[in-house]
Amino acid sequence: MLVVALTGGIGSGKTTACQLFKKLGTPIIDADEIARLLVQPGQPALNEIVKQFGQSILTAEGTLNRAKLRQIIFSDVDNKTWLESILHPRIRQEMARRINELNAPYCIVAIPLLVETNQMEIADRILVIDAPETEQLKRVTLRDNQSQAEIAEIISSQATPTARLAVADDIIHNDGDLERLQQQVESHHQKYLSLGKTV
Ligand code: ADP
Image 1: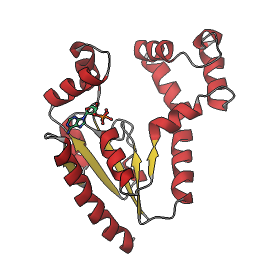
Image 2: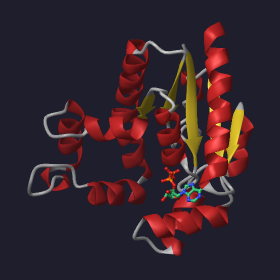
Image 3: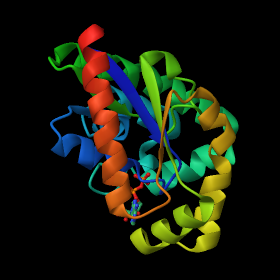
Image 4: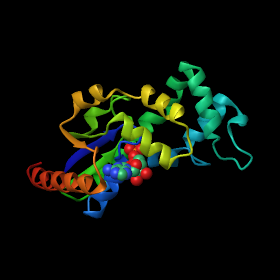
């Protein structure tokens, strides 16, 4: 089976593209979803996080206080490195397990921070969703309750378009309307189906 890693910056259209691939019957493995599952109450990773940062990292309901964790890792790079050492191997292991369970010509593994976390080797091909920064800002402002400045800060903390495009085997240019996105998803789908037959 051909494994295609899909990546892109915030608001580039990754989720939308994945939904379109899914509608065409493509199995999608979502790294963010796995990351969320791994820190649910009772999971070993959450227990380790509590051991490291204390009970105050939990909400009153016993779930992970994400805002607090974000603050802790943004303020100290060692904390960020530690957290990644706890989460990344587990995310990789779970992605590999899910890939092995599939029986399809190809699958898509959505990894927003593929380049930042240097996980390119997980896939046979890398598909980058590329959108102009002005579109990213416009779309995320509409989608989320965040200011342009906050979104701009997230964009600047992520890999540059140049770094992403440097590792891309395939590119979807999400600079038009949804119909244009759909057309590109369909043509990539056809290409991956035929490439999948030879893998
Ligand atoms: P990501 O998952 O990369 O952060 P999304 O797929 O959530 O991005 O897209 C960000 C927002 O922009 C969503 O609200 C989505 O519906 C919208 N969007 C994505 N692509 C387009 C497009 N080509 N035209 C109009 N809106 C779009």
